[in-house]
Image (cartoon, rainbow, N blue to C red):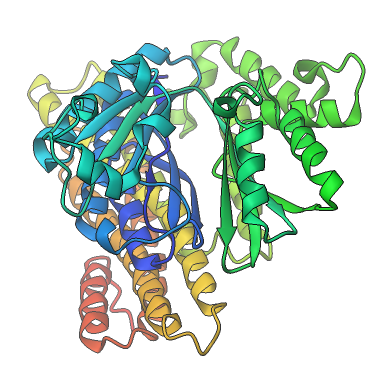
Length: 524
């Protein structure tokens, strides 16, 4: 397995669903990018996007977010409770699995240089990627926010960026690009409107105010809820745990008869941080999460079992006559993943639904086609002259597979965006345009699935040199892609019905019907 990194770009838009969706889609369209989470907040007017990507395409994914955010967001018109200095405000690379942190530092440098050069946006390297000690702390880098930096940059030698022009971008501001370890970002909502007390409390508990180590905290007033919020970040949850931070907050608010109404975890949080909170809160004696958490132990056992299997047992299944092992011994890990998705489809939850299933079918078609090509390339009977074209075809299918896979999570995200818009007050003038934007996105995602699947079928039909013993796999790959087109088309049809821009709806319907015609189905 290659190296992967986690990318958590924060961009300055948490209210306009169409803009958020467009920025997320820009990242998701990059081969290898897998979107894990989209956390948007209207009061903060900020969205936290989380995706993983191989080292080879992680910079491309981040750059896509930077470019689209700069295109859509004007900070001169942006108001929100969260500090910000850029349209794409923060772009950290985080090591996961066995990826060394130094690789993340190199990615940050590469991304920073490219943003500065191609987008003309000033870039400041922070945290582990910082070239200057005073830029390790993100709060110091972002001091003054967009408005303050606009006045300071170009005049103050301490604010010269690491990359890009020594002047603010007129609408996109500046970007902090970095490499960091996993953090825990959580908000604590208090049943008070006393911002003066909240300001004193935030300063008292955070590291810079002499409080707990590795803790950032800022007071925020939530207009939509008429209450105070402490927005906190644990930069090292092993030094200061969630439990310790919560205890410190409760110690300060109790004498004032203020209570915590609820808390919010922002983005993805490590299992270790949550497990440690449970251990501390329950005061569990001699607890070992490596051996006493069921899921952790099962995953380790499955991984060890899979690693110990002979190579023949790890090969993908196919027709037994094809010379591949018919054994089911290696099904454990991938079958578990397949079962999770199938069970999710059969649940009464609205997502994943037909659009996600269409994308899964298309991705499986690409994967199965690539498998048939890969086995054919290994055959001694294959004409050497046919190998270059088959290799190129295999690479194209890999790119298409990644792009279609991204449509799985995007389809679910499009539904969530529509539901969020539908829940807005009916007398809110922003409700209708947001619902329309969400409907368009809900039609665009399956349309893209159909488009990519049709392209994959074209590629497979060019394959010359498929060995007879995997011919059934090659044909099955095309059938899966045809199913993807048909299922995706149904989702385009139903969502296009509600789009009031009839010219756009007609264009979408016309395009998807051409793909249906290509697989022998006239559609509606």
